[in-house]
Image 1 (cartoon, rainbow, N blue to C red):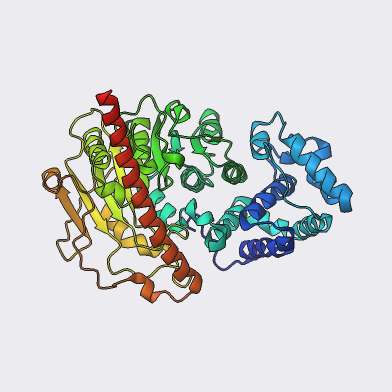
Image 2: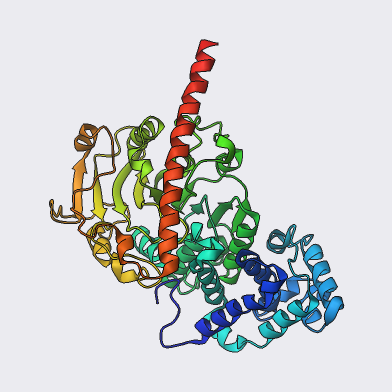
Length: 499
């Protein structure tokens, strides 16, 4: 099955995810939000799943935990004693000598105030069908829970959760390989890294085709992520651990010296945050030149990606439209990027596929050059936006929506497969570097007449309609903030020159 899709014909994982999600009803009168609930579940599920999972040597993973702070010790208690012991467990595991355990529980605090609610959660979790869950994969179960959280618009989690069909499409095209260093500088819950691992394991008989050192590299050193938000980092670490990955998702800011020190990557897969840095702050990177004076995060992430790739390394990155057309810093960045890298393909994504964003987005596919001059000879653009359905709860994004694009893209991850320009009436077209220069290096190129009008007209679910309206407002505000930040940056530079 495609990564992230729940097994068709089986309802075990879906049932368990639904039961876990419905437990949030227990906590509503305890003031627990959706995001807090998923974080709370992460703590509890970590302890329970550690008692259910064995490592490659057949030992239960809970043996990595002190005996006093394992699932059985929490589950057997009642009342205030249980809640107090649970709080002690969170505190003590945050001091663990095990790097992954410590990272998941660092500064962990429960939002539960009523002992009865903790007992309801531990009893319900103990009552789930864990034998069947192990058969289908505990990682799949946890991914299903994260996806459920992202689909719940009230949780706001969709802003960092890339739709699984899109991740699967990108993985199929970029073809991650064993032995490669794979990075996500804005890791979110780790979806790209887990999907890349899934593809590599499928191609290597779950790593058994590899030598012992190669398998160790895959489990411990192949994957690297950076995440800015502590609770989201916890979700990512849990996600990776349940998929047998000990690779690191560090807590940090890629747009600071923390990002500058990352190991160079063979492959970067990412969906960076949209908008401007809080307070209009600029990247704090000594190696940045093009975007050093902008607070536009997505522009700065593009500079990071190109600098972080090894020569010949490849990347696929989800970015909003303004990266393609913004003037000043945006234009300089595009010119610089097309010199250092081969920006060979742009996929114009449909609107409405990001639950919390609502902004128009694209996937940029590029390969870092072996030299720093003239790497982009031309750009292929696939328009999957015009005349597409109104995506939302009633019409979710599916793998088959990307089938025609994947066929047109071809087998070469770096865009070198034979391709056919489909002309003004088709979705796939080629624009030479000279064509792009003639457009003032504006890559926001559309040619199809969109007869769908405003896609929100086709939405029927009230939450989809509200999310679309909110998305338009956020997109407009983001553009205003970007312009304001750009002007402020130019004024600062002028003031320095005059001084």
